[in-house]
Length: 138
Image 1 (cartoon, rainbow, N blue to C red):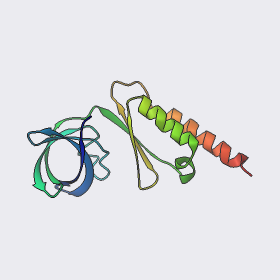
Image 2 (image 1 turned 120 degrees about the horizontal axis):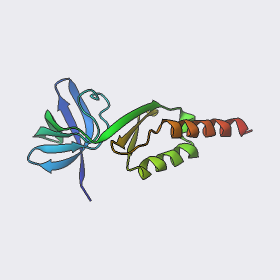
Image 3 (image 1 turned 90 degrees about the horizontal axis):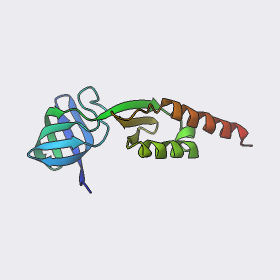
Image 4 (image 1 turned 135 degrees about the vertical axis):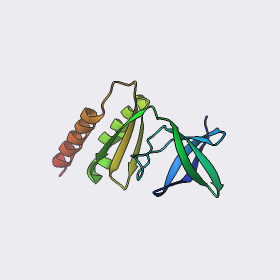
């Protein structure tokens, strides 16, 4: 299994927490969604960085674009805590995709570019099922 490392990634515009896979020779693969720098980086990107020590990497440049298409959704607390979202997230993993929830309600899904699946319909179905359950509850 590949070892992942939590780091602080320093870019020109600021810093962000990131989960990376070290590839050697100052190269890393981004294994989390870049919340604040999504215009510069995306899940799975391979990039060069200088290790500044103390868990901080200074971003130099992107070497290779990640193999994921990212979808971002804002979800309610009701959906986030439902069994329907849990089933949906299982489906995400079955598709060899990745998911992450940030700020308590921003759901990001990275689907491998070769996979012919758009998660929107399945997520909408989970939302409708969660809403039906909440209306049925006394």
